[in-house]
Length: 162
Image 1 (tube, rainbow, N blue to C red):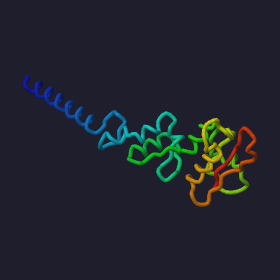
Image 2: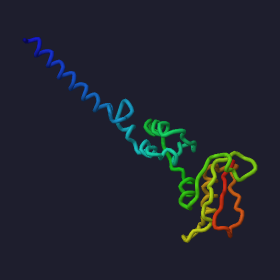
Image 3: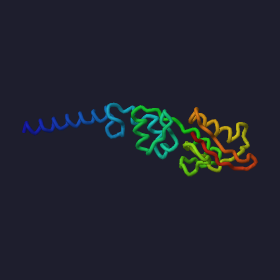
Image 4: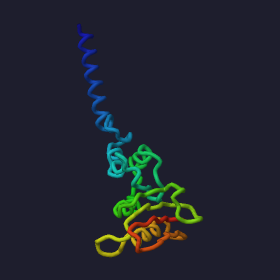
């Protein structure tokens, strides 16, 4: 009879240790091993629910998937907002990194903003200037933005190339 109580006592003690270990190291919360602060970091959360397509690594490179982005953020990497994408969408355009959308004859396409509003009712700067600035911030040395075909047209398509 005594051995039965010992087995139950050991089982309860092991269960308590397992619960403590799971809570201390993130366990089922999806956190990285060795500390819960990384898996739930704001950087990792920016990547979730399609956010990975709108953010960049601190070196300006894109993520290939949500898992890639979450892992980078969870391990302490800095995730930055892709400002050119945000501005393109703000001006009613469609952001693309597809090389077939390149508006220049040469160069390596960084991004294209398809069919954005040429002018807004808000104060300056107007969309072409904002997007050109985004291009030069994306690749400060050797980048080109354009072409701006005709500013009298209500919509433009322009590319940022290097």
